Length: 245
Image: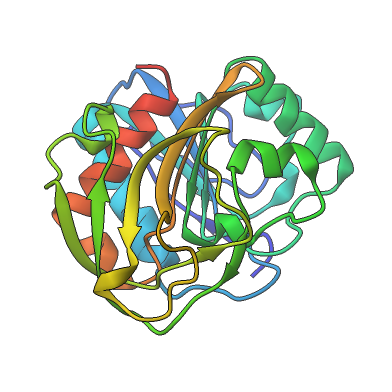
């Protein structure tokens, strides 16, 4: 529902942005905005994802605001945040002025974390395409598959097994992003059916872009994903990395 808000967070009080509610508790080192507006398919897992990110904020020391009002993307409001998370967004979610404000946020050193269908968002916005890394092309049915860590030294990969077996909706992408960013993990298409990118199927990646930091995972389709301790901690560590902390 456009303009819906979800009360959140763990952190110092600050003026509320349009469509965003904050609930102060304890001081934190930086603030995060979780944006989950959908103009296409809407994932049932969004609410669970927000709850999981809130949990990570309490553990890792960042505040979390969550909302779906695109009016939150103004220069003044974005200046309150260190990281913006696109949580299973879909379709065209920002207008031209809002896109310009977000571009400015990134160029001033802001962080971006994209989860799952963030790759099914804003196909006609070149800046976002570069920030994201690769757009969604399709997927097979939900099933178990094996993720193979490629850059275990990255902070967001800390504590993960070298071969990580989990159940999700495994995205194929319109292009292989390798070469334009840092691939953190690949998907082994021999371990499930419906992959179209073999033998090299990046599934988690990061890079610096136009002065900011960008991180993406294709995981997170299912509500159960956000009950997996490894997956949730993985997202939390990615947010801290995107914040430059």
